[in-house]
Length: 187
Image 1 (tube, rainbow, N blue to C red):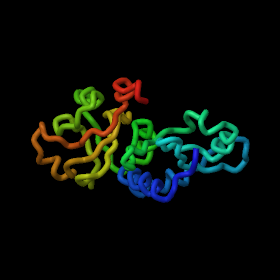
Image 2: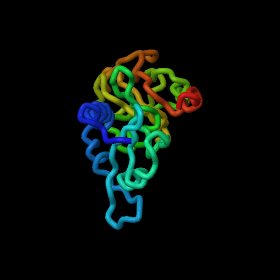
Image 3: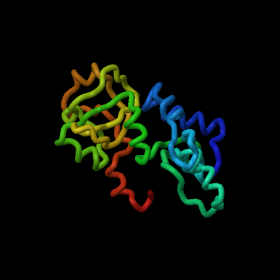
Image 4: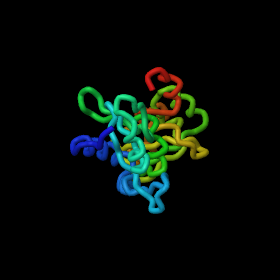
């Protein structure tokens, strides 16, 4: 497990910024209360094989006793680098994104299952959307009871959603909590 280099850090921060905006500062400067130290540490990003983990510095110090080839996971896996070098967020990052989300979408109960099966969000299933959402923004998808279900990319702005027909796509699906069941062998 090693720290991210400059290009990797840029790729991770650009992807996170798309979903959390200026709240990225809260993620980076989040105090960690793990470990025996009286002063809270911080969280950091570490790379193991091709996966990026969000982990406390105290836990990283304690994990140095474990060999790199024997270490399977540490902290929360927030994404992975593809063979082409691009960074993709995984569904495990949902809690981190939901707590710091800039743009949110709430689904009607009738369309929650459709989203959890991997389908895009349609205008007919849209309950609410945050103001000032523009096309191409990263959005976190919630149920009407504020349970985070997944995330995706908005196709239409908030203003365009009001004029859209009920079968028009509003959010392109990227990941959801139903992915745990669909791809449990790959995770």
